[in-house]
Image (tube, rainbow, N blue to C red; front, side, top):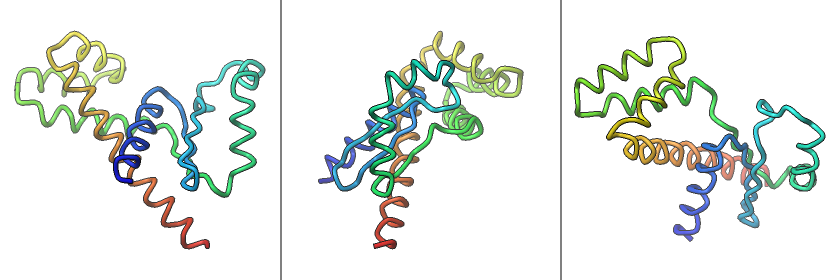
Length: 148
């Protein structure tokens, strides 16, 4: 069971990282991933691609736990935590400076992508997202059990 749970957590974390809100059905272990509504530009095409999933969400609303894409401040906190644990003090200072400037997300990504820390960042971010997902799933499951 734990292996199944960690697989679900990992999958949801990956979907969130791609900009998808997730709906998890704890009764069936089904995950429905739909792009966050904040990034939708063409409603007709969106409905064409995701109408079936949206219908499933509407139909099974009471069985689903919704886990939304992180807010900017939450993503920023993950970047800050990553920077604090870097052992290369010069690179750490460079990233701290980037986080204090305009366009911190874009500039952080550009600098990380061109560094030896690229994979470390991806691994760190995945672990942090998984912690967030696990916490939200546990809360959602506990709250669903209280309603029964």
